Length: 89
Image 1 (tube, rainbow, N blue to C red):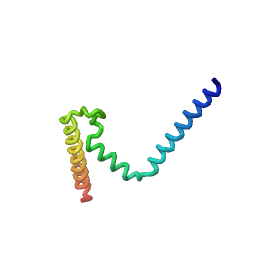
Image 2 (tube, rainbow, N blue to C red):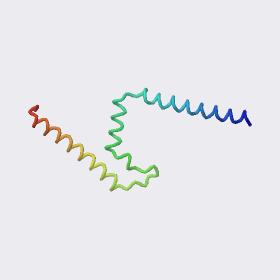
Image 3 (spheres, rainbow, N blue to C red):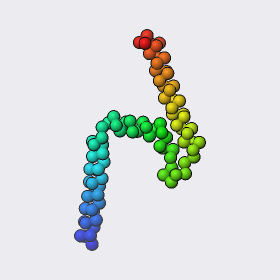
Image 4 (tube, one colour):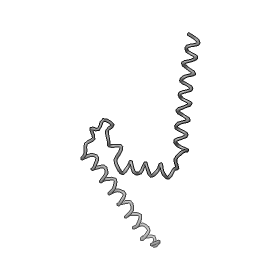
């Protein structure tokens, strides 16, 4: 039983090491700008509202998309207004 426990433990450690290598390779393999762009696209596309089973409510999905786009427009307008108030533009 001792050999079996040791083999099981070594197999688990090997799997964890391979998972770490895969995770680190994914992180280093793509640029930070590409990852940020992909995350922003997923955010504004409301990927977090989509169910893996496909039971997504279309009203909720489009509501999130519209709300996030309107908030982005609001931030841009407020940033522009701030720059005008500071006499930068």
